[in-house]
View (spheres, rainbow, N blue to C red):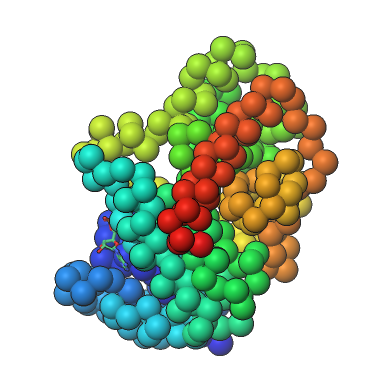
Length: 325
Ligand code: NAI
């Protein structure tokens, strides 16, 4: 059966890196036909049409159709996988309240449209920042969709952490298991090496504490800014890659003995208030995320997790005060 994948912000730079990979079968596998719905704001529809022309020109065998629209009710009609990439970026001098309000104006209506029109098995990944809180807004407008279908992306942070550790220890990324990103997709997110295994041994015991604190954590946290500085544009291909990874793992499951990171609705695990969309170590089986249970959290990690969760609570309180959830 053809799977309908909706990408918002389809004419943006992540959209451009993402759509071709979805159409080629990398999101759902080489046996799954897909139809694409490209949601954009009206002024960007023409650019989305250009991208659609290029998609046509790839003659992808799995691609069954392309729809381009500025109406969320059309874009999310019958959607199975919704990738919410388009968001209002923070511009110079913009206060947090204005940023959250502008995004509330995007993710509220999109959540409602998902609630009204999506397929029963819909899965939602929010990429557009502030991703966790945008996902919370969308979720709060979709009361008929199970809460666990709304997720936000921390897989890019996860992949960045894997790559930094792999370079430090001179091991292939395939030898690293159980990496975890906790908290918000923001510079406060916490990449945790105290449960990560390299060659069966804990990673934090294979690196010195100073590198972990003063190099590893800040490098992962500030990687987005470093890429803007070097490339003159924000990370797009790596963000698209992480979105592909997130959905692929959600649908196909995590490998035995491993887990990944995703921002999912908290059930109160690890002291993260219930209902927040926060990053956790997660496994996936039968298309459902499960938060990994029973990990011991040392004092250093506790402090870092609490800091990031505090930020999520502040964002939640702010959108609540603005009447956005
Ligand atoms: P971009 O500015 O190139 O593209 C965004 C697109 O969204 C634009 O084409 C714009 O017209 C569209 N858009 C805006 N409002 C919309 C609406 N209401 N409906 C549909 N489309 C809408 O930005 P880029 O580089 O593609 O990034 C997109 C988002 O992803 C940003 O918020 C960025 O901060 C975020 N991001 C998140 C990452 C993560 O790890 N969670 C990593 C990298 C980026």
